[in-house]
Image (cartoon, rainbow, N blue to C red; front, side, top):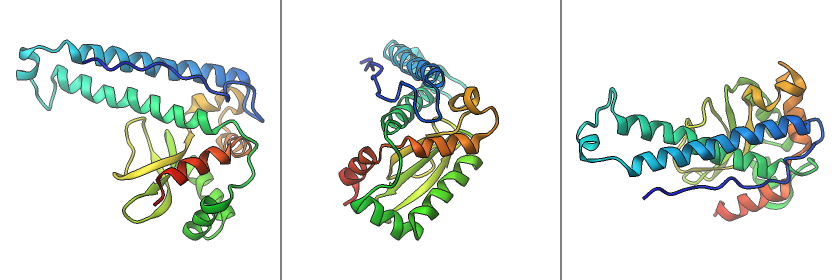
Length: 200
């Protein structure tokens, strides 16, 4: 069965503080492209025949190609949906349980922000603040591509896109200034709700 997705609208597709409307509009088009490619790949998977299944091979086969590229397309969808959703606020700090957890796991909010910025400069594609369900802590993870989230049983509650398309129009190669603008536009209430839903 070919499960299909529809691109979601987001409040952040407007001019933000330090991130232009042009950047966000072009960025949203990339997200729509991931949705379209996911739908295309799912339709092709639904059409596979017995010969395609029998030809499965780890070096190259149609089912391998489709399933690997599906993870890239779906990662592009989910990563961007998280990124766009939380990028519509006024920055500042979180409150309540999330702030307490950040302070416990990083020593202070400022230490967390310093770590996230450095992680963002070191990343090739994505950074996530994620909750580790097994060890019960928050950590800033690097993912160098849409489909390289490094830890199983951890749930991202915040996503920072560090691909050049997220900032090059506004900042050129100055990724650090883009990350500063990212902080100024965070909607901590949404991040707090995500944390409250999973941290038990």
